[in-house]
Amino acid sequence: MSVIGPVTRGVSRSLRIYYGDQARDEAMDRLHAGFVSAGDLVFDVGSHVGDRIGSFRRLGARVVGVEPQPPLYRALRLLYGKDKDVALEPVAVGGAPGETLFHLNIDNPTVSTASDAFLAAANGAPGWEGQAWTRSLSVRVDTLDNLMVRHGRPRFMKIDVEGYEAVALQGLSGRVPALSFEFTTIQRDVALECLDRLEALGYRRFKAALGESQRFEQADPVLPDAMRAWLKGLPHAANSGDIYALDG
Image 1: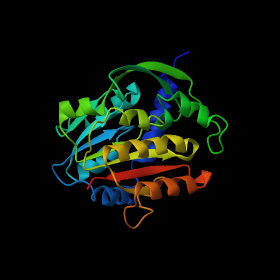
Image 2: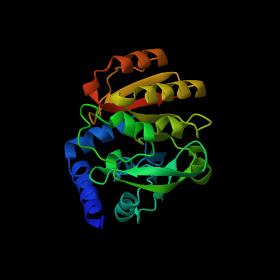
Image 3: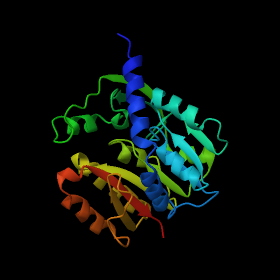
């Protein structure tokens, strides 16, 4: 049976969700403006349909968009392929170059993942009912360090790779001025592993935003242990968010 229809529906659903909300775009731009300015380089790792790329470009930043899912990569090519200040990489990001098996959620591609543990954590979890990963494909993997060799050192790096964040950070050997990584309450262990990795790299200041609020939960950056305690204390219903690591 052809999967072209379901794939198209999933991408169309994502485009409807992540584009066209002016208030959300303005809030996203305000948050990102605290990290990047015109001319800065940004890595958007796990670009999905590129709404973050759009925000960074509105701020005048140059962007490297990283997205291994072929239908989403094609959508990014259509949206940003003619923009000379956007480079697109059709790879996953991990601890070493190579290949990995990528699990596709056809109806909701934003939660497609390279993490088997993510699938196990989502199975039967409240709030994740009805999610199904029905296809898999092999995708190329490269490291954040190698991306920097090709494109330069970014001012800011956003990592949103559905439970694969800690693996992605294994391929980063030094600090960038700021980065964010997504967390979920079904996999707090992954977020804690990310915090451990970032602290080992020398990051000492952290903030967090829940869901798509585009608003920080902390007025001022907190130390690693305080961020760990905040993460552990979140109710399951909080579901997801992003933790920001600040250098200096």
